Image (cartoon, protein in one colour):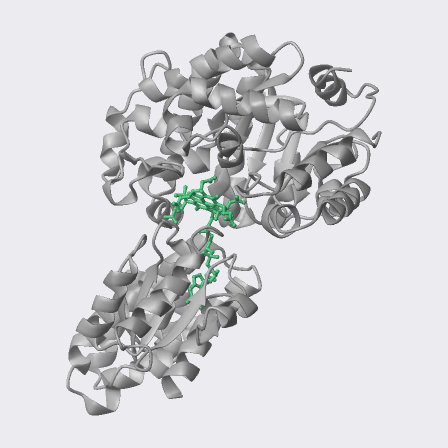
Length: 336
Length: 212
Ligand code: B12
């Protein structure tokens, strides 16, 4: 089976020859080709080179257009670039420091916005270079994360209590931005759309269910209507919101290491495909090939057969290649 | 409910305007500003810390409670200047280290320390060792509280400790460190005076380091 066939078969509930493997790589990937993260963030050729080389070297089943937010800068947010780490939205100059500006924001055209367009071109190139054998993954920001980028995460956290109707408005806006961006990514060749919603783990179950879930659901349903499969990744400790995450109907729920897979399995039922989730730093970067293999076996045991191998979050830069090989080796040597 | 209990409840519930009103009421009733800290603000924030540890409170709840506490401290601070009995528990230079933009945890720690009676010099995020040294000197601080959320920036805490030593200030300040990737043993290995796993621990630690 090719990686592409393997992933799709797993998602469709069909037989696979071994476990699929789809770890998140960004800084690790760019380090493989000896370039700086600035180049990965600003030039899709570099992103595609890094992704394709990394996926081939380690035999991943996918290539991904994942990187820092592309939506926020194209909406007008100020982003600061660094030489060799991901650019970051400048919170002190947040686009929505004044909430009333939301009414004037338009949904950016992904083909006109420079940062979004770069990703679209990256996906087309990934499709061309690796799309035969590997799944091509696009990426968008989830409502909580995208809104944090526009409003400033510290302020957004207060808005949940100060101005719930603003929360609904800004979440609704970001879902539209995300869907429009995803539509173009799918046309360019993305098979799967990843949703990253890191800030969603910072709120209580009550706030998650009342505010975040409905918009994540709208996004997931919209992506399905566009014909994509959906991978949801929420960084951090999600133990308190596992049930909600499991009822979004995502094709893949990708968990960070703080959320044990057995808890996720219990909360989400036997059919949900889970992805993850060894501790990226303690297990993967600082472990040995043997300990990585053993940690992966424990994840598999907890997750059961509906399972894709990965780390809890981005593979950290400076992770020894042998450890990443061990992670992949576990997948190759085990059927679900 | 007593006035102090009402204040505590309003802080826990994150009702800043109510806290402001109750603080003014307390003062108009002749309650001493210095008494409001131990009787209302400190116990309220201790309870907020407990709820955070027990996962009853998440970031939004902690931030609105801290903001409510600040509504009281903003009124009280100016009244305490020159009151010998109400000297701050210590002066803390707080920041997230160079290269690191994560500031939510640092903000929570700073606000909790502030409501525990410390004077806070918050330098923000992505702060160089040099700036920290300057701030310690300029504000005559006795504590430095550093946060890091990235394994790649944790190492910068060590450079700060070295810079403090090079500036001849290491004996003068206690250094505490925290943030998700930081551990007790790592803190010890870089020569920090203490590590705290969360904001309540930061308050306990600051109290014990300031007393030492
Ligand atoms: C919000 C967030 C961001 C926001 C930050 C916005 C902001 N203003 O803070 C943005 C989008 C900018 C961001 C960017 C990045 N992030 Co980020 N981010 C997070 C996230 C989702 C939450 C962190 C957080 O605020 N936690 C809540 C606070 C309250 O917890 P805390 O900081 O640990 O603080 C508590 C304790 O540690 C302690 N404490 C904290 N400081 C101190 C200090 C002292 C003295 C003491 C005693 C105690 C103490 O008390 C606090 C309260 O109890 C985490 C994932 C997660 N859900 O945990 C990733 C995470 C921290 N980010 C990560 C990464 C890799 C990045 C990026 C490199 C890009 C990326 N790949 O996402 C960039 C780097 C930017 C930069 N140069 O800093 C990784 C770090 C991995 C690692 N170990 O190195 C994480 C863990 C995600 C992951 N799983 O990969 N991120």
